[in-house]
Image (tube, rainbow, N blue to C red; front, side, top):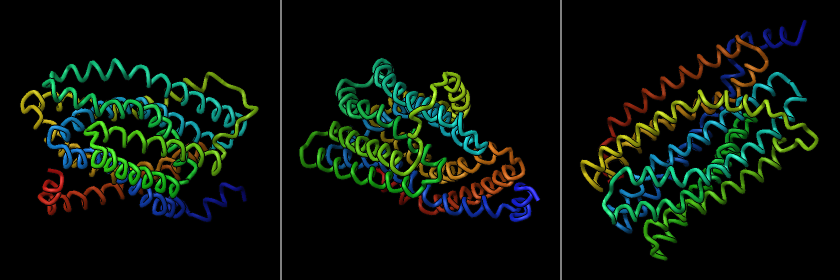
Length: 350
């Protein structure tokens, strides 16, 4: 009996393996995504309570810009993780080493590029809002910390996806919780104690990103073989493969970023600083719903890559059905809960 037949006989293609792994991965990924969501929300809550509505609005106004810049991170991260996972699944050890090397240097050079190209992008978008002079100053004060953190965030994002495809979900949960706690402490310190205003919230996020990025790289080096490519060739063809795999997956993020920008544009022109507060509540509600669906997708990604790389179409089909079923149930439960507690949520955010 061949190895493939043994696998078929053992699991009978009933999804016992993928189901077990999904149950193991999903809670950790949901906690990871929730920590990331709170990382964004904490800035607004702290600045809003200490500095007032205008500061809260300025943070929410900058949020669509962060999402737009994050599309670049998504392209590289998804492309790298998909190519790595399928290559691991196919057991192509020679190409795997080269892909690791290309992925590392592409991540570094794109992070440097983002730190440069974001400057005119941020300038043009903030200017397009046509904000009042005081509100414009507040947005730029917050933007400084976020722009400095942007290349670090890209590296962390790539590391996050790489940790996913090797199944290190508990490490991801640890990193996200640490980042969220550090951001909260630094926000309270910079905004509440040193009275740096909305700029303090930006610097708090920068500090949290520095720690997250550093820990991510250290743990990738110590706990995985992602950085083990010393004698591998640098194959330029894999750059194209990474971009080809990452671009389709980033389309949803790009559309969300553009929708967020145009909605913010309409709200701030119609309601002024109040528009930023309104958009912040809407964005938080949407992001909270997305925590569950993206957690399920992230949990299924490493398994899908391995099945695809091994050309196990039956296993991949079962995995997709299981993930869709879990996503449908969780979305339905979340919708019901939100309807019951929506007034409490809105009171919390306002």
